[in-house]
Image (cartoon, rainbow, N blue to C red; front, top):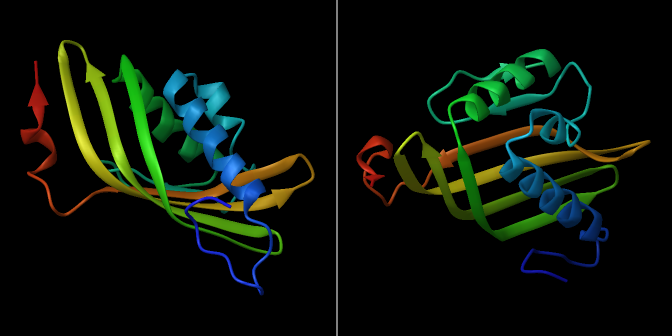
Length: 147
């Protein structure tokens, strides 16, 4: 068991935890196809990144990911699970951590909260919703520039 919450009425969270680790590993590659392989093909998928509008549906999610990867030359995440839960074919993670991104010659380090919701499909656990937001206890996002 990881740092997530689990009680007798909640099913094994390991598959959800593993899907989350796979997603963050893919995200760090900045390879859109690798990242999209973590996503469900459902028309109901959604993604919310800081600074861009909510995207709904596989094509819009892909476009949001392409936008992030196009403007990022390097990305590193260090996430710590706060809650990992599973109920049947649904699982979710709530994490806190740091995202360090490089854009040209600028590097930004931001503390974030992340929520991922997964659905178990025939080919494994797939993301149906991702929401990342800056943690409230830090300076504004664009004031975090470091060279």
